[in-house]
Image 1 (spheres, rainbow, N blue to C red):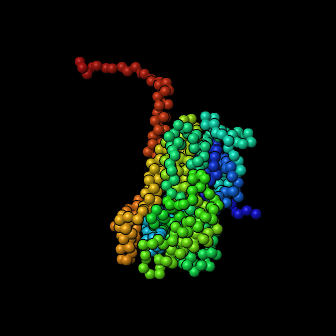
Image 2 (cartoon, rainbow, N blue to C red):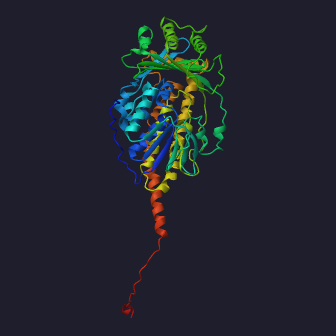
Image 3 (cartoon, rainbow, N blue to C red):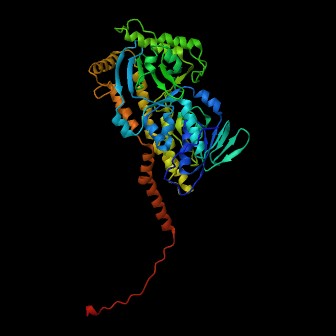
Length: 499
C-alpha cells in the first residue's frame, strides 16, 4: 500500500480556460512544472524515458536547495514532507583544502532567511524527485515513465513516441537536459547549440553512509553537529563542499578539481561508477603538500577527514564542469513549444542554484498560465516566460561562475590576502562572510540578493504591468473594428436673443 495522498493547496488564481500541456522530461524541473500547472487546473501529461528505478540510481547523490527555491516548495504545501528528508544548514565552516586549516565560520543570518521565507537545505536527490513525482501524481498529472519521445512536431504541437503513437496538446514543454536533442527545437540555428566549451574542471560527487561516519571518530565530528553546518574547503585549483543529508542519513561531498591525471574516453560524459584508480588519484591530491605547514594537530585531523570521506563513500560519480552559454531562443516560432530548465539555461555541474532555477521556471511558467483567458494568449505567455527568466538566469550563471573560480583560486598573493582576511575576522569572533570580508564577502552579498528573488511575484508583476495592458489594448482594438452607430437628432435654434 502506497503512502497517503498529499493534501496540497491549489492556487487561488484560476485561468479563464484550461488547456493541455505535454511535458517531455520527468526530472525535477519537469515534475515541478507538472505540479505547478495542475495547481492552476491545466491538464498535463509528463513523458519520461527512464523508469523509477533507473532515476533513483542516477539520483543517488546529495544535492542542495537554496532559500529562493525551498520557499516555493513550502508555498506549494510541501514543507512538512521536505523536512522528513532534508537537513537545514545553520552556517558554513571554511577550511583550506590542502592543509585543513580552519579559516573561519559564518552563520546564516536568521533575519535574512525569515525575510526570504525559505531555508538552505541539503538532501538526497532521489528523495526530492520521488516527492515531486508523488505530488504531481496526486495533483492529477498523467505521469508516463519508461516512454521514449522520438520526435516533436512544433508546428503541429505533437510528439511521436517510440511505439508510433502520436500525442497532441496545446503546448509542448521540453524539460530536458543540456545534451538532449530537443534543445534544438526552438531554433536549430542557435549559436549556443554549437558551442564546444571545454571542461573547466571535474566534479566528483560522493555519498558517505551514516554508519561509516559514526564509526570513525574523526568523521563523526562532522556528522553529529548539534546545528548542522556546511563545510567548505578552498584550495589551489580545487575545492570541496560537504554536508549531512537526511532521508538516507548520509553525508554528501562535492569535490571540484582542475588537475587530474586520468582523462576519460569522453570528457563530456558523466561516469556513475568511477574506476578505483580515479579515486586513489583524488585522495592523493587531497594530501598536504610540501611547503604547506599548518601549526597544531587540528589541520592534519581535518585533512584526514576529507580523505576518509572519499574512502568511505558508497556512491561515487564524476563528470565535467563546463560554462555552457544559455540558449538565445527558448520558444519555437509557432508559439506553442518552449524549453525550460537546464535545456534553456545550463549551469555548471554542482552549482548551488542548479535545481533551484528549474523550480523557479516552473513557478513562473504556471503563474503566467494561471491568467490564461484565450488561446491566442499562449504564444504571448511563452515569450513572456523567456523575457522574465532570461536576465535572472544570466545573473545566476555569472554568480555561480565567479563563485567557483574564487573557491578554486590558485595559490597567489590574492589568495593569501583572501585567506588572511578570513583568519583575522575569525580571530575577532566575526563571520568570515560579513561586511568587510573581502571579495568572498562581496560574492556572499550577491548570493543573498539571489536568495531574495520571488518567482511568482515576478510573473504577477508582469501580468499587472504588461499583460493586462495588452489585453485592454486588444479589447479596445476589437471595439474600434465594430461598426459605430451614431444617432442624430434635429435641434431647433431660436435666435430671438440676437434681435
